[in-house]
Image 1 (spheres, rainbow, N blue to C red):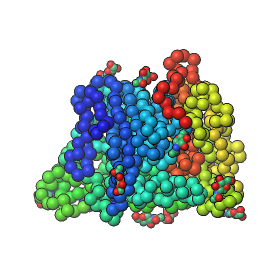
Image 2: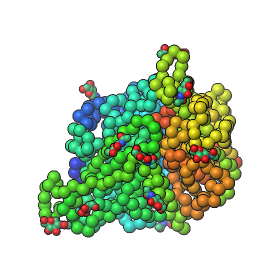
Image 3: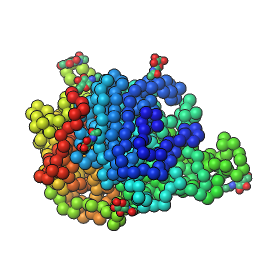
Length: 577
Ligand SMILES: *[C@@H]1O[C@H](CO)[C@@H](O)[C@H](O)[C@H]1NC(C)=O
Ligand SMILES: *[C@@H]1O[C@H](CO)[C@@H](O)[C@H](O)[C@H]1NC(C)=O
Ligand SMILES: *[C@@H]1O[C@H](CO)[C@@H](O)[C@H](O)[C@H]1NC(C)=O
Ligand SMILES: *[C@@H]1O[C@H](CO)[C@@H](O)[C@H](O)[C@H]1NC(C)=O
Ligand SMILES: *[C@@H]1O[C@H](CO)[C@@H](O)[C@H](O)[C@H]1NC(C)=O
Ligand SMILES: *[C@@H]1O[C@H](CO)[C@@H](O)[C@H](O)[C@H]1NC(C)=O
Ligand SMILES: *[C@@H]1O[C@H](CO)[C@@H](O)[C@H](O)[C@H]1NC(C)=O
Ligand SMILES: *[C@@H]1O[C@H](CO)[C@@H](O)[C@H](O)[C@H]1NC(C)=O
Ligand SMILES: *[C@@H]1O[C@H](CO)[C@@H](O)[C@H](O)[C@H]1NC(C)=O
Ligand SMILES: *[C@@H]1O[C@H](CO)[C@@H](O)[C@H](O)[C@H]1NC(C)=O
Ligand SMILES: *[C@@H]1O[C@H](CO)[C@@H](O)[C@H](O)[C@H]1NC(C)=O
Ligand SMILES: *[C@@H]1O[C@H](CO)[C@@H](O)[C@H](O)[C@H]1NC(C)=O
Ligand SMILES: [Cu+2]
């Protein structure tokens, strides 16, 4: 595994052929400490006949899988060998009382600067499945990302048949230019950023792009076997449809929580979401090969990458021994770009497994209700400039009309050291200050306010949060991600949320539990979580362009009274600003 290594584990990734990465499960592993070293370094990579230097972990793109068992302690020593400031986020890991290891820049830590080292230290408690790690500063996560694979405890099994093989499938987005230049230019001019040049599967764009067919992900399978595909959407700005021609898959897990199994031909996955599916191969090798493709689900008004990545599912030993390029190739059909009803139907099929062993601990009572509007807006153009955003303004994005400004030091330190003055205020509104028809005619004034404001919650507050899309600059789906907690998705609908009728449809029995949820385009979603993890927790749109425009905020969860309800002091190597 290069310089990332696993103690006491036989887990290996094997380059079986081409670019197909299969995971071999460890046979003997004990609840233990996993040591990794992540060297952040540049590497020249060629895609679409374009060579450029990208930022990587250990020279790998996508980065190395981080593999652990439920209950393990993980220590990742990150060494910054590049000119950029870097942080790493362990997306979906709950970080119980280990908020110093969460990673979002200027929220839980100052960046790891050039030449510096920081060791992330956390224990995986009560989670098993697929997540991913990624850089959490500016747009560095476009190339700095990789799978997190949490295996069940060593004496535990999956609540489904043991798969023959496990395969991570990580979707990404490739720019021929430097993504840092793309977002920096967009923030300067106020315009939307230039769209990506390709989507990728495990770093490979595949044969539907010019000069790219040699860079194709190939999954070679045996007939009559069950494969566990660990799907991860690490794309920057795009929700994706994914489908494998002539094959149906069974969804068994979302965001590292088991679900009730359901079958589907097409998966919808937002940036920040992970979904485990079982692929049962055909009983006999068909004399055919099959494309697996991913392409965008898009609801906004701006431009977007409307291309398709393809990988190949190839059976070993087709009985007529034709060379692969002579076999017929079948292609899946993806839904139309803006298939919002299809997406809502798909999303509603997710249910927690909610078994005796894996219960859905949905908060049944609520201490505090929040109603957040989620959407785009604008900032006025500075007097000495011309701006290229909507109507000559600059694009912005907000929660309850507040576009969140990152401070120049980290919120968690300021909070812990009781030095919030001049860094943040604790007055984030629980409701919009000016109610309007959120999904109706847009208001004349699209300007947002700017500030660094947080919600403060006493320990163990039971929170209900309704997130309402706005149509101020066009209705649009937004994948909202919460750090520090999973939430239960108890309801969703189109139009404006009505507090009188909405709750009647809430599922408080077996709603899906996850860390990222799509706020439906022109609709709302309701979630509940128990604020039992002290610290400062970021919540933001997982479209990086929207995060960059300010669609982000922070929850501060206070310490409880007991010793094990308090945030420990910061580690001694925590970076300084
Ligand atoms: C990438 O290529 C450039 C130009 O060929 C070269 O100067 C540079 O050293 C290479 N960087 C790495 C990390 O290999
Ligand atoms: C990791 O954190 C735990 C819990 O705070 C602490 O006991 C342990 O000493 C830390 N380990 C290292 C190597 O920093
Ligand atoms: C595995 O071990 C844990 C802790 O010892 C125990 O709680 C659990 O019931 C065991 N599970 C099985 C399937 O034996
Ligand atoms: C794949 O699906 C297509 C369209 O449904 C069908 O015509 C074809 O026979 C199938 N091929 C195989 C090998 O399953
Ligand atoms: C594949 O082709 C061979 C010979 O051409 C045939 O015997 C075999 O039945 C075919 N397999 C399937 C699954 O159609
Ligand atoms: C996106 O691409 C699809 C085909 O791949 C095409 O049908 C559709 O018109 C394109 N849409 C836009 C908005 O470019
Ligand atoms: C999707 O786009 C098509 C073509 O632009 C349009 O006709 C259709 O109304 C749109 N559907 C939805 C649900 O917005
Ligand atoms: C969505 O589900 C409804 C109700 O089951 C069904 O009538 C409709 O056809 C579905 N629409 C799509 C696009 O899947
Ligand atoms: C515009 O003015 C601001 C200060 O008010 C300055 O920081 C910025 O560099 C100026 N931009 C241009 C393009 O002149
Ligand atoms: C654009 O700005 C002008 C002048 O500020 C205003 O009159 C007009 O209504 C705006 N148009 C839109 C679509 O917001
Ligand atoms: C909000 O606007 C929509 C679309 O114009 C309209 O159908 C709806 O009746 C409006 N709702 C309210 C409460 O005014
Ligand atoms: C890196 O972060 C430090 C601390 O916030 C900041 O002072 C410095 O300007 C940053 N450097 C770069 C290259 O962004
Ligand atoms: Cu968004």
